[in-house]
Image (tube, rainbow, N blue to C red; front, side, top):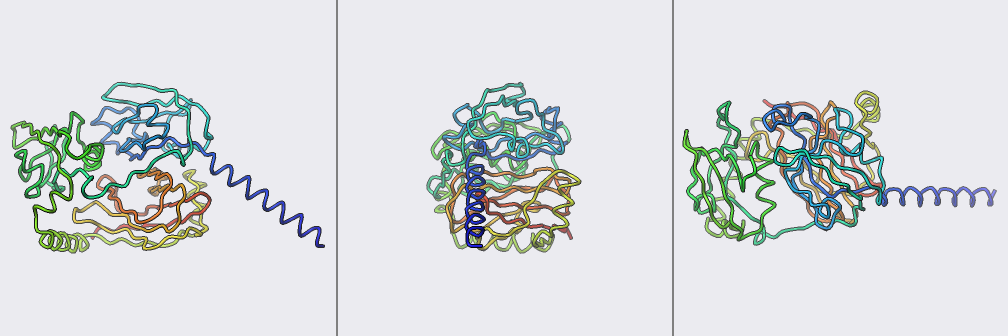
Length: 363
């Protein structure tokens, strides 16, 4: 009996080791991405609306080494073109670190490709920027209607910010930032995040029917805050958040095993239901701009971390591979182009995970 127990224990240990090796050897590109709506894909002349729009490239990753950039639009890897049930995450499951494949993408309206050797998540170097290092244009989302023939983002301008310094005003519509077209708030955030404090930012914007251009050295978040009274700014944001909370309700609950099985059978998305990831202060809540949300949590352990959000059709609408990560996390994501309904949040560190069903109701 003792021999059988020992053999069973050794077998379990071997399986666990093999599984851990498999997890550590998973292919890693090193990008943060967002999905695009059919409307956005049409505006940007993307034939396939199921691709992944790059918002950030992790330093020292395979994507970084192959020169990929924010605003690249990946629509195919190898011989697998993305579809409603075949997205970046599912395609990458077929590859291990060290494998090679051709990555097909669109840059500035032109189709391109690169032969990429995939790395490991541990290769990526996630960067945390302080307020002194964080570039800040100084605009807030404005939900004014954009003319049908215009692609751009309407904004309000924060006082004493870079945007005000270059002459921008409330209700201006940002058309491009550093020649990148701005379709939504995601684009605006990606364009700013790829900059460094002190670099020159060039903004084309529409005021009424007049196209204007502003140029300035982008300041840091800390510099903008120092020019404004912090107490007043905090009170305004809290007040705006209370108003937004009245317009929408967010409920978060554990994912039932039956529902996970249904998602796997109907839309081909596998969702772990074992809630074994150590996580604290997990919360999703609206921010002051209607249609946007903040995701917050704290991870006490350092390990390769990835975040995924799917809609009820199995479409990946948010993806963030953090590389090795521990500590506080907060990021904004936009659901303006997605209806109210049910979403699925997955956070994974190696073989540990937590999956939550998020129900959004607009009142």
